[in-house]
Image (cartoon, rainbow, N blue to C red; front, side):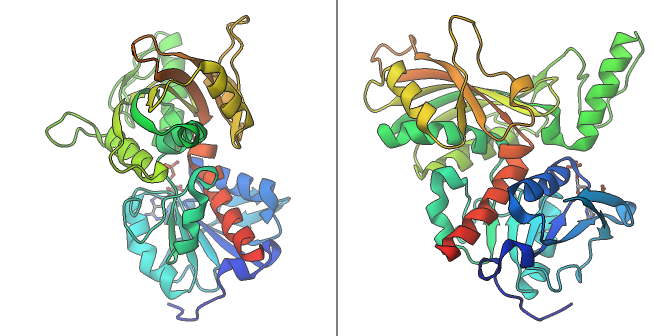
Amino acid sequence: MSSTASAQPAEKDAANLTIAVVGATGAVGIELLRSLEARGFGGASLRPLASARSAGQSLAFAGRMVTVEELTEDSFAGVDVALFSAGASISRHYREAVRAAGALMIDNSSAFRMDDDVPLVVPEVNGQVLANHGGVIANPNCVAAIMTVALAPLHRASPIRRLQAATYQSASGAGAAAMEELRLATRAALDGKAFEPKVLPHPYAFNLFSHNAAIEGEDGYNGEELKAMAETRRILSVPDLAIGITCVRVPVLRAHSIAMTVQFDRPMAAAEARALLAAAPGLRLVDDRAANHFPMPSEASGVDEVLVGRIRTDLGDPTGCSLALFVSGDQLLKGAALNAVQILEAIQSRAAG
Ligand code: A2P
């Protein structure tokens, strides 16, 4: 393993960076390549890494073909920044190799998200915490990232006291194999053929089910719900925020939707919330009551912004302090790859500024 520390990425122009993408052949990995290209990193030297199964495969990047290499302890020599999206155990295993190579790690897994010395970042929401990273930066859980982009502008206007949410989560969150399973299961159902699920635990075509993460602990919450709640508190910097969430997998390919009911410390009119959300970065208002047109995963797929709408006073709260809203955001983009690349951008611009 190389012990030569390379410069921190911030000290180099994007075109002079060497960027490793771990999990480059996965659903998020492919979007990492696209987001890097789309956001000015196409001139960087790219090192796509995956398992031995994919070594030698060619991937398109910025008008050229790049060859996938097998991930090993030696993969990070000369690398400035390593974007990880191959699962928490791979991130834990290779953290030391990345550190020894002097590279910055931006990690899309859950491995370090709650570590005190690792910032958990949605740049539009809490980009200021990037000032104190120690070589590893965590990219949040997709639900937490998509929710907090919409909550932050409201929270700045009036602190959030309580949040209730229900998710409608797409196949992409379970990876490329789950997306393919949804396609195959749907085709089999339409053809009247039997289909045995292999990736997800339940029939997926024309069905929905409680999120496939295991139930953890006595309270009956699953791992996805626990992550989304803990990370939302951390990103918004409200450790005692009251949150309850139910996570559900729906037969949608790649954008998550979330219904939220938010209680503030004062009454907030729907019109005020609408104006705040319309002006906030990373959001697109889709809130046309006359046309009954609100956020939909089909319109959020492939889109950088999180769509937000159905903004209305929650009639379930007699104090008038609660609003209901609905968001759809691309799980592979703001929920994963795009946010990771925005973290890299923010690191670069902090240094340049
Ligand atoms: P591979 O395609 O070679 O299996 P997804 O989340 O869509 O399932 O993608 C997971 C990503 O993580 C893929 O790029 C996959 O590579 C990669 N990956 C899985 N296991 C390993 C491993 N042991 N070493 C390196 N990469 C891995």
